[in-house]
Length: 377
Image (cartoon, rainbow, N blue to C red; front, top):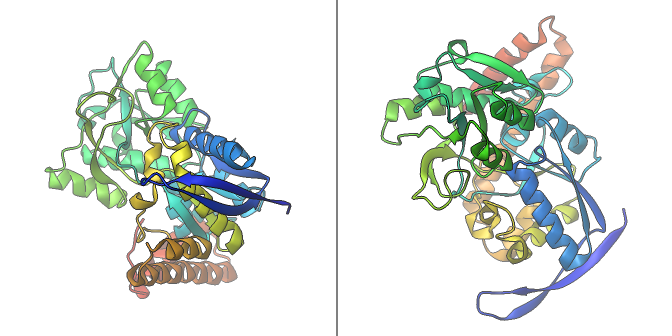
């Protein structure tokens, strides 16, 4: 692979300029969410910073669902993927679509994640339906994205907050995230999941039906527990960035890290190190260039997240003085979790069960429980 050594100056808060070097391919590719999504827009902004600072061409490939974003990474056709909890946590877990016999638990590794807190990831509803709470979704048309377990589990979690299940609503299937929001604008569906700063959400807010975000009451512990029983990574949060939210006192919803820049355990350590370094040290160049992008800052990283970090990223964190013994122990434990899931998967493959989906769902839970690990999904 041909590499380009990029040297540039980073302006620190003190005003001093320090030359930094990183080595990355002159041309790179990431997968990301659909065109118009917050993740896609942020990846494009990061690509512009790489181009301006180092002449590196970043090609951003939009994917309609978690499988289409992860497959190029698995095949080595892209260096990284800017994904969500589906392509990271659920891929690691071998859950939902990743539990299919041709997939299984994936050795996902994180470089950085957007933990901005300024946005929520939630279900928006058409403003002309009179929906004020998640309980009001009963009997309404709710988007379901084929091949996108993260989006669908999150939607299910918000239904659970309102005391509902998929059986209580009319499930409308779409082939991708963008299509679901086009469906909301065009009155094909009444509710869809998105980041509040998604371009699609802004389009819906400006459309003929309008847009409303039903609130989450953090003090309603029973409702929050129902939500987190489905999606444990969702946390109540007040967003200040997004469609209908900008310039207000904020919207009380819930959120999680998005996008998450991931690799696999086979990704070259030097490549992961240099990508992490470039992301951190180019941050002043792309900060503010897309809604919600501030969450990529180094001081916003959660070093004890639900998916392990890549060894190359850890090398940079150690140099930056932000990695701890506790973080390393947590990371090691997550890798053990992945190994337990992989071993269970390989053992089940040897047995060739007639009903793979049912057998894997049971074997997966058994393996985690026997190893004393949290059973999710």
